Length: 569
Ligand code: DON
Image (cartoon, rainbow, N blue to C red; front, side):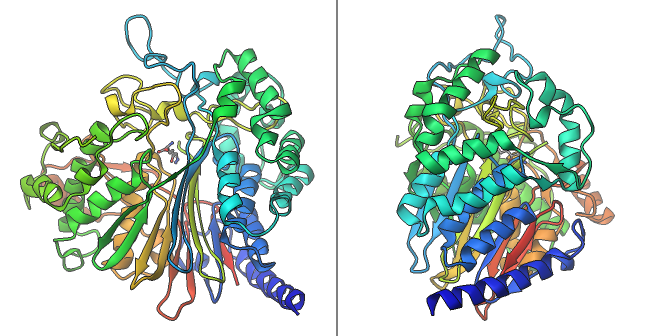
């Protein structure tokens, strides 16, 4: 009986999944990607990864099983950001309300040191923390998947990693965006690799072209057969260390053996009656998101209007103050006493906004981090999952830049991250996302570099309400923030919210970045008259989110900025 109902589930899942797949693949309007399901949903950056997740849920796996399946599938079909050579954060909520937050962020190798990216004059050496072997932190993804699955999964690991192995061994076809991404990085992929591999091809990649990743398939098989040791020990570890030796990197067997994920206390707060659950340091995401929400909460955003000059001005002013705090106080809490509670205190946040003026920008050079009591190209990817029991998983994972350090581990077939660039190489010198940092985020052996990743879950009346997150470097926090206010204040549906244009301010540089069409001419004029500098830029973030509708159905929000797709049943 159980088997029969599983089969029926699977069949209907397939039908619905394929129905949604045959929407135009790169459609840029909000409606084409919108789907609503009754029971379960998976939203990821790639249709094939979404399909893997939906199939696992349909055969009775829970959200954590689907998470593992999706994570490894993305590592194959979405090499720009999906990974086993990177790290990330998971925020989850069980149907009964139990919360778990797992940190599987990369760690600095033991031989890393504070000034490792500076020349003898103390200047930052261009690209050293961004490209090549020295840019890589010790990967956390594989340990993270095992750690989460050991305590929260239900199906055997071997079963849920198999679809990824099959995709790597049998091949899959490249989407237009992925072909473009690989072509854009072709020279770098050749320059920074010490061995030939699937990614060092010299001919232009074409959309629809088949790609097979046999080395990666073998690495995934070792993970399937030997568990965590299939990556952090044995053959794969040997291949990583040999790669490091060829490329003058510093990661060692001990670094791999010593890698460990950490269960963290979540950052929790409320916004207009909604419960907010997000990631604690070493991500700055949860703290910064909660600060932003609390700073704008006293103001009637809805009355101001979506993307009105008043709303954009208020949000910008909150953002510049929050990012100033981020630069000063946020880092790995195992190495630096991050004052999380003090940064979220109501009085502190009220004081921070005391200098806010309604019709006047506060120049960033007059804004510093607040005073708190010290008690002690982008590519990343996010996926959101809700299973038919009501368990929810929000995971953001990254190798940092598109294709990470551009180093593929020889014979192991996977790209290494360039996460070391998320440390502050030198106080005050911006990283690839223009973010600056100081002591709290200085390089130390074994330390985790500060992140902006903000996997988040919202509750309403003690029930699951929304699962949300995005890539986008420094813009992650403000994109998650905008999706929350889009739904809570501006009463948008999930797909409408995800598709809505976005803007961003991060203290330094002192400018409002906005997407084409985000702000009308009049609004830009008003903002300029307040003293803001406006800067048009390409897509901001790629949000994949799920909203629980009042009748209990699930609405997916798959970002039209990418190949992202929602599926479910
Ligand atoms: O952890 C972080 O904040 C960055 N490594 C994320 C990079 C990112 O989102 C790039 N993608 N768009």
